[in-house]
Image (cartoon, rainbow, N blue to C red; front, side, top):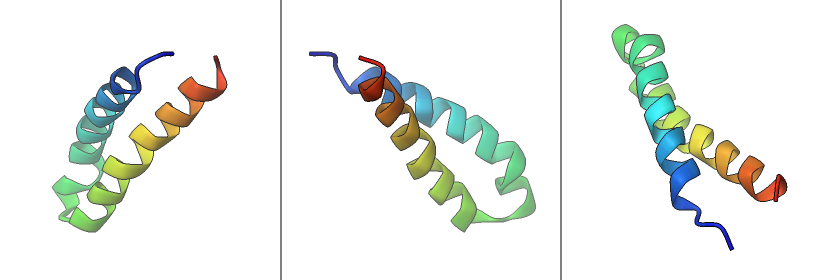
Length: 51
C-alpha cells in the first residue's frame, strides 16, 4: 500500500506557492486556506485512483 504522505507534501508545496502569488498578495487569506486544503486533497484522491 502506498503512503499518502508524498501527494500531500507535493500538494501543500504547490498550493503554498500558487496561493502566495494568487491570494496572499491580494490579501485574500480565506481563499489561500481553502487552496491549502483542496489541492493536496485532489492530489491524494488522484493518487489513490491511479493505483
